[in-house]
Amino acid sequence: MIDELYSARILKLAANLPHSGRLAAPDGTGERVAKLCGSKAVIDVALDASGRVASFAQDVKACALGQAAAGVLGESIVGASLEELTAARDAMSDMFKAGGEGPTGRFEGLQALKQVADYPARHASTMVAIEAAVDAMRQALERKRPAARTSLAGAA
Image (cartoon, rainbow, N blue to C red):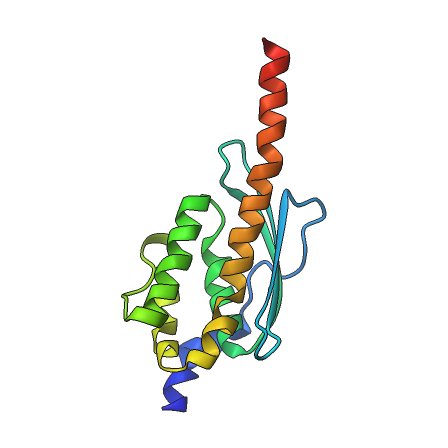
């Protein structure tokens, strides 16, 4: 059963972490740590004018499952909205906890981690990157909102 969990696909995803590092000037940063194992993800995002991810960087220190999830995230997140990212996170959680099918659309690659559902102790470490990305997006959007209100008030 453990061989299924660490399949060649999972190990390949874990070994290839797109957008590794940090952004010089992110609009938002999210950080999550899985308490059980210490897996950690720090995610930086910069948004475009429509509030979608324009640039992304990740510093992930996690087990192979957390690294694999971060690999899929890195392949898919540029161009994503907060709604898409939140829906993917929720679908991933449902996949682990309630037997759901997993994320669809741009984040459907996370379905490769479906077998993690059988290992509850691994859920948090597998979710650290996407949870941190949601936090980073929310922070970035909050920072952008006051700027948008200020520019609108100045135009009136």
